[in-house]
Image 1 (cartoon, rainbow over the protein chains, first blue to last red):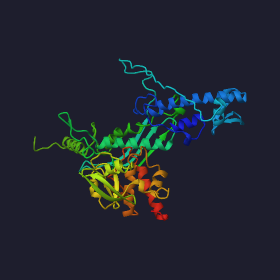
Image 2 (tube, helix red, strand yellow):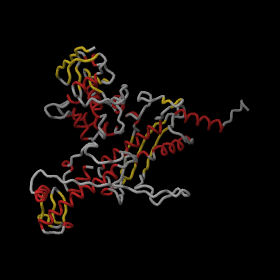
Image 3 (cartoon, each protein chain N blue to C red):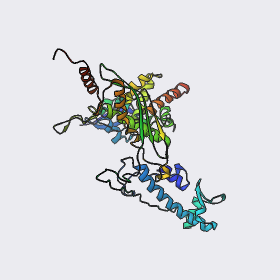
Image 4 (cartoon, each protein chain N blue to C red):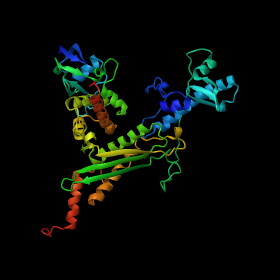
Length: 288
Length: 160
C-alpha cells in the first residue's frame, strides 16, 4: 500500500506511514481474504492518493499559471511535464494551499467491484470475478513403493501477479502459499469423530516445517498487467496454492500409475491403492 | 503463591514477584514488557515463543517462570548492542527472511543457538535444528539463506 501511495503522489516509500486497522480511524473494509487486498484496497488507496494529488496540482497550476493536466508529481515535487525547473515542492504546495504550516489534506475513495450473475443453465458469466489467478506448479517426486512415502525433489511455483508491485514479496507469497498447500496435499487433515475435532492443536495437526521443504524449490512471478488493477497489479495471495495438489497427484500417477482422488495424499492411501492395483494385475489364485 | 524470582535477563539482573503457575512467557511479556516473546500454539509445538536459557532454546510458553531462577535468559531485545543489530538480525533483513514477522524472533534465537553450537552446519543439520520453529508464511527458503548469510558474517567478522 505504501508503494502505491508513494508512486501516485511522487514521494518516497519511506515517507508513507501506514496506520494499522482500527475502526476509530480506518474506513470500512471487508477482510483480508480471497487475495483481494492488493487489488481492492490498492485501488481505493490509489484513488484516495490521486484526489490529494489533484488538489495539490490545482494549487500549483494556479501559481505557475499552467493547466493542472500538464503537471507531474515525482521526487517530492510537482512540476510541469517537460520543464522540471517549473515546479513546487509538495511542502510549498501545502503552504500555498493553506497559508500556514502543519496542515493536512484528506483523500477518501471507495473501490466497489461488480460481478454478473452466472447463467443457471450454463454456469457461465461474462464477468464472474474481477480477475483470475493463472497458476502452475511443476513437481518432480519419488514414491517409495514399500512405504508409500512421497519425497519432493524439485518444486516450482509459477503465478501471474499482474504487475508485481513488490517482486520479492510476490516471489515469497507464491512459494509460501505453494508450500502451505503442499502440507494440505500430503498430510494436513482435520479429523472428526461424532462431530468432534480430534486433532485441534498443533501437537496433533502438523503443518509444513522446514523439513518439508523440497530439495530444490523456486517461484517464478509472471507479470501480465491487469487492466483494472492498481498500476496493473492483482492479488497473488493464493495463486501459488491452486495447482499444487493436482501437480502432485499427476506426478504420483506418472511415477507409480495410481490416481489418488482424495486429499491428503498419505502414504497409507498410496500403499492401499498400490496393493489394490497389484491384486488386480496378479489375482490371488489361492482364493479362487 | 507469589514468590521472588531472581534471574538474569538480556545481560541484567532482575528480581520479580511471580506466581508459582506463571509461565516464563507471561513474566517476560506482562512484567518486563518484552514484546518480542510471542505465544503461538501455547503447547510447545510451534517454536514462536522460543527464548534462550543459558544459551539453549526453550519454549517459554511451557516453562514455569520459577525454573529460570538463577539462569541467564536472552530474548531478541538483548541481541543488539550499542544501537547495532546482531549479525543474525542483519542477515534476516538482508535476505528478507520474514513476511508477516510473527515467528521471526523465535527463529532468530534458534538460529543463534544453532550457530553457537555448530558454526558450520550442514543443510540437514540446519533443517533438523530449525524444524521446531514453524513459519505459516512458509518462508523457509529465505530463512535458510539468512542462516547461511549470518554464518558467513560470523566467519568473516569479529562480531558473533
